Structures are given as structure tokens and as C-alpha cells.
Length: 247
Image (cartoon, rainbow, N blue to C red; front, side, top):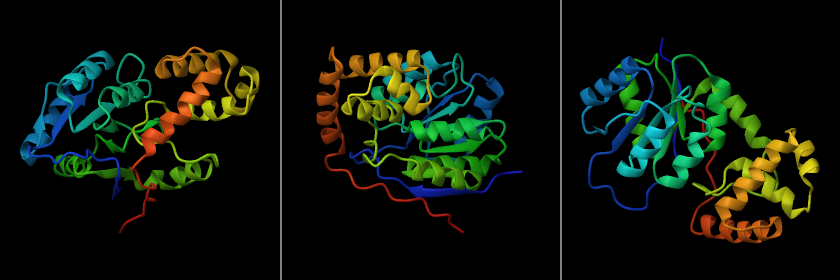
């Protein structure tokens, strides 16, 4: 049985005018699933599929080469699932829109992927025409959100810190922005770990990634550079529009 889905136009569209059919890259280790998606899109017409990926390394390489309009990532894509890959995709191809997909109702991963920057989640149990329609909507700038996730998304929205929205398609992940805000308050690694309910070693790894991404060597330099980055990445963008439940 197919799931009912909310779709709502987002603001993170490629500013250039698209003059060719949207390109879709499928990243799934399951050959049958790749074939099903390819056939659904082919039958729908007006969408081009590029060579598919079977793991995260291939997905990143093909994204860098093709810069697809839509990247469909299976939530269990090897070696480590979709969550580790999403920030890398955003950095390599900022205008590629990411949809996650799974065979079951993997709500926890779907929510984490949305939090990381995916624009939607689809289930493999959708009928092929419905699946193609949702992907077409995503290619046209829609967010594809199953209704069952709406309440959980509202909870995440209410839990956002008062420091402001994460810039769209940011070089830093949402978690990294949270850590930057705590670094601004001169918090220690231990204090940040306690605040975010994470281990100190995890915080250390995040800080190391922040320094690398911002190309700085100290935490204070990271805070200064992150403020400049936030200004650059939010310049010209609009406040995110809330998702409506639809009919």
C-alpha cells in the first residue's frame, strides 16, 4: 500500500534556469530496486537517469561528475548508510536535491536525513506512477514528506535553538552549527558533550571536521570564520516556509 505524502515547494532551488530535463541519480545497492526506479522514471518521461551508484563512494563520484537535479539515496546505502553521505553531497553539489528511500518505514533515519539536509523521503512500496510523480515534484523544487513524519518534524522544529536557522545548503551540517554556537559561548569539549548528550570523542571529531571545512587551526578562528560563512550563505535567502499538511 502506498503512503500519503505531503509536498511543498522549498526555497533552495538552483538559481539558474533549467533548459534540459531533470537528471536523476539513483544510489542503491539493490539491483532490483535500481531497475524499478529507473523503469518508473523512464515510463514517466521527461526525466533523464544517469548511471546508478551501488555505494557511497560511487554516489559521491557520480554526483561530482553529473551534478544531478535529484539524488535518490537508499537509507541503508553501504558502507555507513545515507546520513554520513548527505553533507558530502551538499558540499560537492550544493544544488542537487536529495531524496532518501527505503523498503520499510525507517522513520528515525528519514527524520535524521531531513535534519541533515535531504528534501524528502519516499518509500519503495509506492506504485511506480506515484513514485515517478513524487520524484518529478522533487525535481521541480517540492519537499516530499510522508504525513506520518509531520508531528515528529514539528517537534524537531520546536527544538531548534534560538540562534537561528541553519543556512540552506551550508558547508557545515546542522550538528556542526550547533557546536559552533556552543564554541561561541567558550564551552569546553566536555561541556558541549554534556549539552548535546554526546561523547567527548564525538565532539572532538566534529570540531576537527569544522576546523578542516573552515580551513582554520583554532576554535576561536572557527567561530570568527563561521560567522562570516553564515552571513555569506544566508545572504539573499528567505526565511524557510513551514510545511502545510495538504489535503
